[in-house]
Length: 510
Figure 1: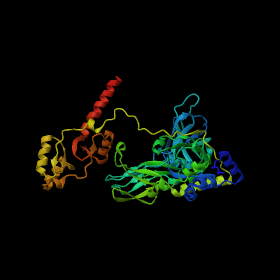
Figure 2 (figure 1 turned 135 degrees about the vertical axis):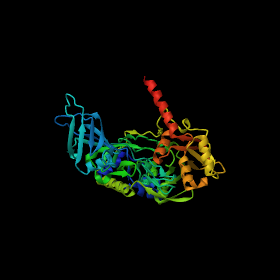
Figure 3 (figure 1 turned 45 degrees about the vertical axis):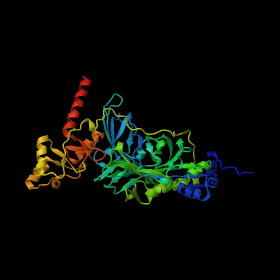
Figure 4 (figure 1 turned 90 degrees about the vertical axis):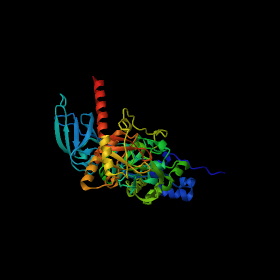
């Protein structure tokens, strides 16, 4: 007689939790068991697999009810330690976003820090203004509050616990400050996030047990999955979760406000989700290893629409501390804490074994066929809309006198310099020529700028304006994919386009 395959219900598992006979392992241990015993035998041995992740989750925040003042105020604006919260909800309700910056301390302090300070029972300076009504006559309010003083403080995070993350690196010659941390120039580092095989959605890729109503561990409290997170894109293996929990029950060990230098603030969030082993198929999914989780290395030095995939890597490679890009060994750095992810999974395991945390199946499964689309934009000007197409270039072998004559003939203050194969190798300006004459240089190659800031034909003009502002320049050569000059974009042409658009918009209004 054939042995029946393992099938158990959530009710049976909860009964085991209640009587203390439940068998729980963390996700990393389950990977070992599935490798050793196979999915079928592992399913017989284990009732629950606990997962964990602890990383920066900017899309987090807290709904707060402050209670009514005397005399009452309808808050039009409110600040907590000089971090503004959104008040377009009700008279004394607000939503404090983790990524909101302090008006005084800027990038050094923000909503994530305020949330951590609240959970740590620190006093928070509150300031509010209102416009005054018959029922809410007060217009200004200043006080101090603690978490205990609030009626409710409910964490609602619109997007947490990504299924996986892209790896960020930087091909340019300058340092970039991003939400993926500091990216050094010339591929000198690669940053990544996520806990790999410990991550919740890596262990339930088909959303069989994680869905609307699933009970989770959230920053030390019992929380729930509200639904799919924003930018939920399981088609691309980029699923996300929207989660909620009571801030008053949370532990500061499992949430930390943080600053990404040069970028902004965030909140490190500890999330653990139990996976009930209802059958062999789920056991097999929880047997995933870091070597099974593949993601892409992306060049953040390229504009967002065009970012190339440099290569694919596994989390096993990333955790080794080194990956290879274009024949070069690149050190990798995690933004997430593997130690804290494991601490979360272990703490959730302990609570289940002690009978203080019971499991729930989702009342509704999350979609598996959605994907995230880019923003729809209208009238987005591109480089091709403003670039000068008839551009004179000069050979790197030319003399300074040749360059000076060309500047006079074309009335252009910027001349691209090209090599014998027609590729851009530098740029020379009228100022360079003046300096060269004064210092008695003769060869163009001696004075030209070799590290040229360039633009591409279909690059958004907004990015070009940012380059000009950042590097204090007034013109950029436009090049094709083979580094050949096809045009020039200047601050004068950009100003003309902006002026035309404003005039057209003004005519539409009248």
